[in-house]
Amino acid sequence: MSKTTCMRMAALLVCVIVSVPMSVLAAEGTVSVAGNSGYLWRGQLLNDEAVLQPSFTAATDYGLSFNAWGNFNLTDNLGPDAENEFNEVDLTVSYDVPIDAVSLSVAVAEYLFPHATVTDDAGVGAAAPGTREVQVTLGLDDIILAPTLMVAYDFDEADGFYASASVSHSLDLAEGLSLEGALSISMADSSYNEYYFGVDDSALNDAGATLTLSYVPMENVTVSTYVTYAKLLDSDIEDAADEIYFNNGDIVVGGVTAEYTF
Image (cartoon, rainbow, N blue to C red; front, top):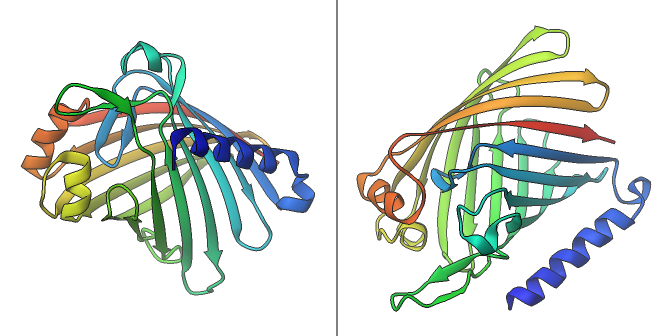
């Protein structure tokens, strides 16, 4: 599928979601904007300068949700064509399976990369191809540390698996003020690592720790700030990421998010 076709599909989907009354489409809508010191994704520091990451989610009464998310570069760190532009737009459809004992969701994500290019061995640049994933997330919310397992399969460009296990705990500090800590560790198979890092090995890929301070100043509004520490665990993957991305050993990023639910 060409990038032009994907972008037209993305624009159509967003227009449909926004134009349909929420009372018909969904029980709840959420709009958020995050300002971050960098763009960190699965241990890959894709941009080490400031970005904005807006998001819109519509959640139906039947467990079906639609999300549109984007990464907007505030600098020319990725090149002049990417400055003040979206270089990634993700469209996700998910379904929360109605099971009492656990939380289980299944999602399909479309990753689009406008204003992003890749360079071949001959030094020729071309538009970055989009890709697609199916994701299954299993959580145990009612037990201590709320363990969660997410398994993603990229069935397009990477044709590989990535899995992440995490735990988290939240403390109420005052009325409307809470602090949450989360730890995660992830692995991927050889196909996934070959595509993203050029390393043809399965490995423990990355680990991370995040602290998030959230404040609810009024009904339906949440403001939060976070800091994340991330580390690539495999030495070959770490060396490759230092060459391909903005990774340089240990990574620390932070940001602020404003969220409105209606």
